[in-house]
Amino acid sequence: MPLPSIGTVATAPVTDPLSELRAAVLAAAGAAVGDPGPKLSLERPPKAELGDYSTNAALLLAPTAGVPPREVAERLAGELDSRLGGAAARIEVAGPGFLNLFMTDAWHREAATGLLAAGASLGASVAEAPERIMVEFVSANPTGPVTAASGRGAAYGDALARLFEHTGHAVEREYYLNDAGSQVRLFAASVAARMQDAELPEDGYAGGYVGELAAELAPDHPADDLDALEVAAIEAMRERIEATLRRFGVEYDTWSSERSLRDSGAVEHVITQLRERGHVYEHEGAIWLRTTGFGDDKDRVLIRADGEPTYFAPDIAYHLDKIERGHERLINVLGADHHGYVPRMRAAIAALGFDPDRFEAQIMQLVNIVEGGERKRMGKRRGEFVTLDELIDDIGVDATRFFMLQRSSDSPIDIDLELARSTSQENPVYYVQYAHARVASILRKAAEEGVAASEDEIGAAAVQAVGAAAQPAERALVRRLLELRAEVSEAATRRAPHRLCAYAMATAADFHAFYRDCRVVGAEEPGAEAARLGLCVATKRTIATTLGLLGVSAPERM
Image 1 (cartoon, rainbow, N blue to C red):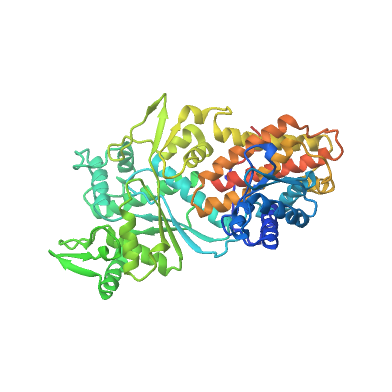
Image 2 (tube, rainbow, N blue to C red):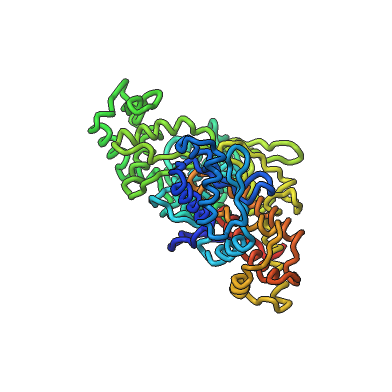
């Protein structure tokens, strides 16, 4: 099944009931006492008996009013009730001064129909300050297949780009090929050695893929022409990398090349700019950048004494190229061993006269592949590693992406192959996808029984059923669905797609509870069937949108 494509939302999203509710609290606070400030919260209480939503507005306003919080809360409750126009069944003062809001069944029903009306903008928002964002990710040396470890960066970078698009930013996905330098030369020499059945060079690449590549290239590329072999071997690996990532649902807008940067004179150009700004000096025959003037712990070599550039010099040229292409924010997804890279690159950007805050680095922690309670070893040069293709072959694209994304990027993850293969509720991606498939099954049943032939027809009927009573499980599911927009916005702002994994699982749990407690097709209560079918459609779209932002499919049948 092809992965869903979540693109930029061109139009403003449908009005959000939670935003309207928060606005009502702010307006009531302003009329009753004053502005409660940015710490105002509107949250779901931990227990159902405490209401549908709770706000701390009175606690924040009490110091300004000069009276106890509960007294402020009483005053605020009356003002808020009049502004909500009957949407709240009751508003209670609780604890030290919290306001607990109990919303009506009609409010929940109307909120659900609003979700149905959202269409492609479901969960979307329009950024206050839209940016042109470059997300550069994976960018592993083209000296071997994409490993499972690099797969984490692939899943993360792609999900981040999808989130940015869904929140109104213009995004470009880029892969930077480190196709020049000593490691590339060593790789070509390893391929040449395999062609000649010779001993590998010291620290050469020993994986079986090197021999396969040697056999493929041998008819057209003699081993003694190392320059030509280097170009051919890197291009062959690049094609393999691109094929693997495309299989993983990752499509790049651009591929940039270190070799091209070097050949274009971009490295000399950026060093000239840095020298003209007074930040370059020579010492012991090498050319240095004075990064300590911009917060780095030591100055960095740009050109070694033998005239060869370090990796840092073309990297600076590359980031200047990104800026000159018009990108306002540069986000690099890097491996776990790149912490020291961040301050030196920020220093280089500052030395060029640009705001270093334009540059962000998201550091991916390690991926451990676990089977039978044991972790598999990783080491590209030794040829002891799990490739992303092998992982996909074993557990599939969906499980691989979901497991890669369900933990914060700053935490190591263990991918338990036995769990990922299982078709049980303990497997999180199966649990979420099964909820989507179950909704689809309900909708097929409705069509088969002549209740409703299409989602549009269901939506129209749901609008007419907003007066239907709602069971607690229905109300809880509506409130969960309403959180999608805030979760998407928060995940994009915090660079935290793992939040959507947690949200998807919570949504699935609430749907399964609704399915257990509420009959849908054939419900006898007045208006319940139409309203519940509408809620099913809203749930299906919410799960599909959430999974789509993660790059995971939403199957109709399982």
